[in-house]
Amino acid sequence: MISSFIILLFIVIYFSLLMLISWLTSRRTKDHTYFDGNRESPWFLVAFGMIGSGISAVSLVSIPGNVGNDNLYYFQFILGTIVGYLFIAFVLIPIFHKLKLVSIYSYLDQRFGATSYRTGSLFFLVSQSFGAAFRLLLSVKILQTAFFDQLGISHVLTVIIVLLLIWLYTNKSGIKTIVWTDALQSFFLITVIIVSILMIKSSMGLSFGAMISTIVEHPYSRLFNWDASAGSNFFKQFISGILITIALVGLDQSMMQKSLTVGNLKDARKNVLSFSFFIAFAQTLFLGLGVLLYAYMAQKGISWSMADGMFLKTDEIYPFLTQNYFGMIGAMAFFIGVVASTFATIDSCITALTTAFSYDFLNFEKQSHAQRVKIKNRVLLGVNTVIFLIVISFWNSQGAIINTIFKVAGYTYGPILGLYLLGLFTTIKLKETWVPLACVAAAVLTWLLNSWMVESYHFDFGFMNILVNAVLTILFLLIIKKN
View (cartoon, rainbow, N blue to C red):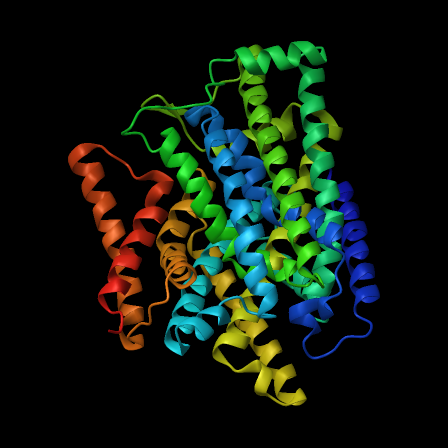
């Protein structure tokens, strides 16, 4: 275990760096700087920084831990994400830049009307609130075990401390600061991945070639699943990878807000394409790390609790091994990765939620300077409060959180995806009054269909919930189209 003093020293140094960046980027701020960064961000910096936002602590522990139950089937999802990023770069980014959007959901206002606009934004607010809270939940659990429990600090206070630290370095310049702090945190995160793999390699006494052979030849290294009834079936994973990427990146305010701070379309497109390569490579490394973790446990005779042939609490495997078997360097590297990924992910989510609510529901652009300051501060406080309440409510939840996040996204982002697909590829108009009902009905029916299919036929939609939901949304919207 790392001593409390070393962890405290690291937190102080790390947070001081973030505050320094915040101070440097807070000069020349305007009313809208918090939301659009004055549209001056360098594209390569945004692309590199988005790695930290895309790879949360959930990815850091859930993807490797889940290998024991799902092999390398997540790689099928990664292949789909590459296609999704191409759609974002060549379809969505040109539209968002042409319209000079701050909140990307204002596209729905121009295409359909105010009700569709606010319906799409509301679904994002719900989904992002839970997504951010679940990511923070996992991060805080790790920090709690590694540090705060040793000081006798409750998890409730830990959540408050983390949210307060994020508020301190982002409340002034928002997205302008986050572009730079996320780049720093992405650097730490990538370093952590490499250090972790090297530490396991050294602990197992393997050469580089032997390590590769261990990964390739391991029983958990199956890449493709052709079982049609399984949630991890290739086509389900690949197609859902495309759709979830479009929805959770291209139609997600927290991810697109950074791209929209880039000044021109050409650079914004380069940003998305570069980021797609970085994130796919990093996630593939996580899968390799997962195989090594289970190979290490087998070599050292470390057992893990199981039920019905499945490993339990897989999110705890990586933290447990780093804190007890990989020495000071391995444990410290992991802790740095958790802190970096936590701040990089949650700060973007909080800023995006604040932006969406301020612009989409409170007419931020039409307010006076004094009113804008009040709106931003009050919404920011409200967003932090909601995330705090969700984290506390789900504190005792178990299982791989990454699966929970994607399942929730399937129900909440499906209607957003349906609205955008209908808007982009048709010219129809909608009877606006019925749009919220159509979107909610599609989400509820998707849940009912999936439950019925699992119970009656043992057929799980898996991540494909988002496709079913989007298709149902489109069908319901077509029913309420104007003649």
